[in-house]
Image (cartoon, rainbow, N blue to C red; front, side, top):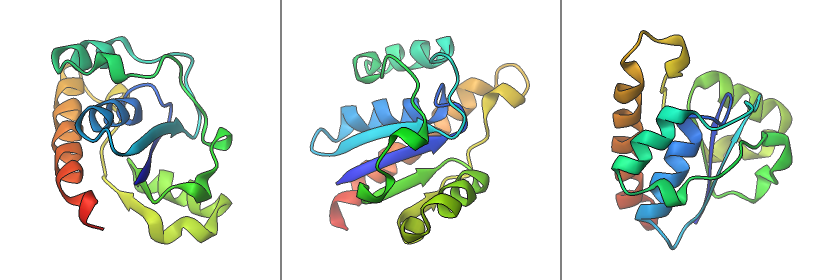
Length: 135
């Protein structure tokens, strides 16, 4: 199973999902990308992953979606509907592979919400890890 997580900057949501799924499903190929990659991985993303003993699965640099061979993934997780639209505009053939998790970017939320966003991602990744092997 080849999985791609997509968010805006590839600095918090998608790299966290990537690291957590890599830890849970070593039999999967898991990557992440951003539609507008940030300069670095968010510090709090590193802190949260360290607490989960998943820091070793975190990528060292952000990556852009344009760098990926999008058609090669079995499942593409878009954090928001806008990310799905971006992907489908450029790679219409992958539309049926995309799932939207509807997870907000914590950079636009009040202080303290990053933890809630992390917990939501963790829950969704655990659900995915338990069910995706049956596809």
